[in-house]
Image 1 (cartoon, helix red, strand yellow):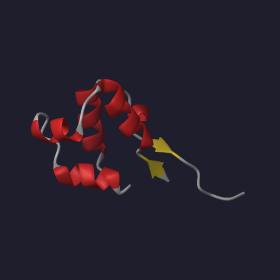
Image 2 (cartoon, rainbow, N blue to C red; image 1 turned 180 degrees about the vertical axis):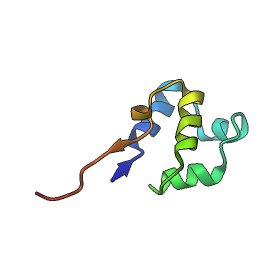
Image 3 (cartoon, helix red, strand yellow; image 1 turned 180 degrees about the horizontal axis):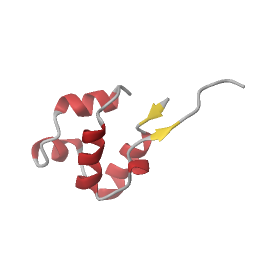
Length: 69
């Protein structure tokens, strides 16, 4: 499963709020809501966020293997 936990850590480290993403960088509130709820977002949105935050994809999302062995 994809987790957005690194996204929230990156926002905090960069001192950027979701308000700033929405109002200054034109990231839609629907995208922020999808991230909050753990729903999928497009690779284009991930690219946009990486560009805005000057970070790597791994600073936005991480794959967690939820399969029980």
